[in-house]
Image (cartoon, rainbow, N blue to C red; front, side):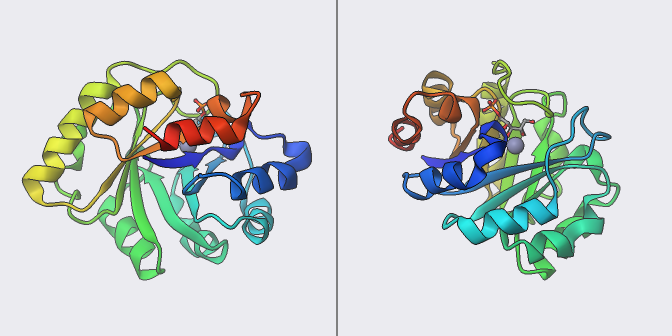
Amino acid sequence: MIVSPSLLSANFGNLANDIKMINDSEANWLHLDVMDGVFVPNISFGFPVIKYIQQLSTKPLDVHLMIIEPDKFTNEVRDCGAEYMTVHYEACKHLNRTIQHIKEAGMKAGVSLNPATPVCMLDDIINEVDLILLMSVNPGFGGQKFIPGTLSKVKQLRSLIERTGSKAIIEVDGGVNDITGVELARAGADALVAGNYVFKSPDPIKAIAKLHAI
Ligand code: DX5
Ligand code: ZN
């Protein structure tokens, strides 16, 4: 299983320490949640902070933009060294164009769906994207409870990918732990984001290893 620890649950007073822990772990990516207080009812961190994180991280950056009009910031995200730039379906007026811009900027393109957005909304872009991020909580906060209906969305998405020959990776974000992680893997997920499960664990390296072994 691909594991992408979410830095949202890290100690913002000592990010260098938590980034080093992730570097030393079996994590595959580093998940960074950018929030604008408009698309979601919270604000996290922005590009000057991510630039600093990039200097310290040895893991590819998996940047999840919970912001309106994410297209405006494609170059900033690229300049932060992001591997994946993921935008919300609900935040883009011209999603196909946004995906093209992300790819033209040299990044892999991800699209995220809120829990209330059905998988069929991806029908016409599934062959254009590198990653689909299914939200298993309403975005904006760490530490929320996993929404069980996500499991059937993962299955639907897996069958859409098989039917269309898409190469998209299925990533799931929110309330992921060693129990929901196993269920998600069975349903067909390729990658798991985990914030609280990793950073509130007494042994974060072990928690990452446990998810990785799924
Ligand atoms: C929530 C963010 C998540 C968050 C997950 O809006 O997108 O990445 O950090 O946190 P946990 O794993 O604690 O639910
Ligand atoms: Zn996220």
